[in-house]
Length: 118
Image (cartoon, rainbow, N blue to C red; front, side, top):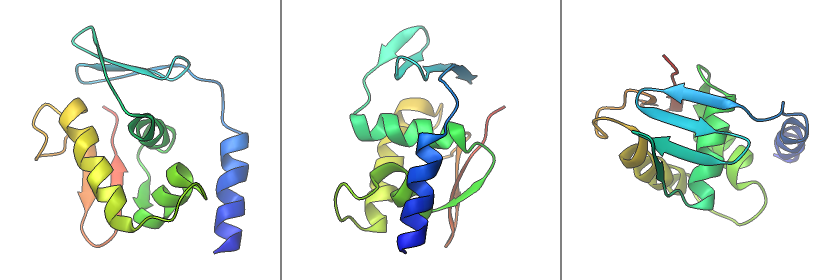
């Protein structure tokens, strides 16, 4: 557990500088930490911003809930894996054309999630 947390901290320190990522009708500016949909800024909570950025940095990879907890929540607070599910659900409503049917954020049953860029 300790090694996983240390690895997560090291990964965060060595991330490349931000850029703009376009997916569907969304544009995520990693430098400004802002999401735009249909050209209008979408309000994201700080946790949703960190989650979206984590997904973008790990696009195409299968991420367990524990990996997401380590990468997004870190040691900030003790939360359960269900917190990940709730945050993913609210983020989906803001980025997905049809939120229950994830086009970008795929649920992998009993495993976690994968963020797919077109």
